[in-house]
Length: 89
Image (tube, rainbow, N blue to C red):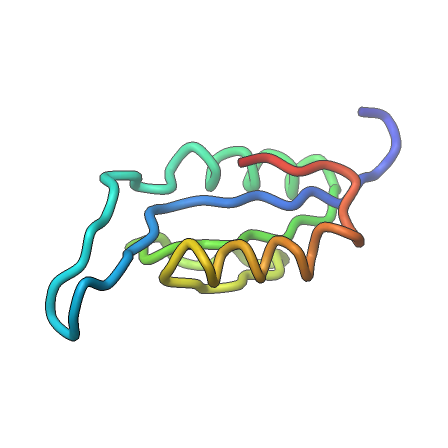
């Protein structure tokens, strides 16, 4: 990629609540998406991260959108996708 792009990266798990205290989740850590976003930022690209519940700190210089459920992630992706050149999920 020689030209500067805007990457939209999803990372981390999603939680689907069964009731107020129980939920179904996956074991994603978000580290792979985080590393992709880090590398893109170092190369001078713009990055938006849509992050499920994770212990990872938002990256400086990155637009960071926190979500919990898959529905919230879908809404955030639909909001950011028209402005992105590349989507990494």
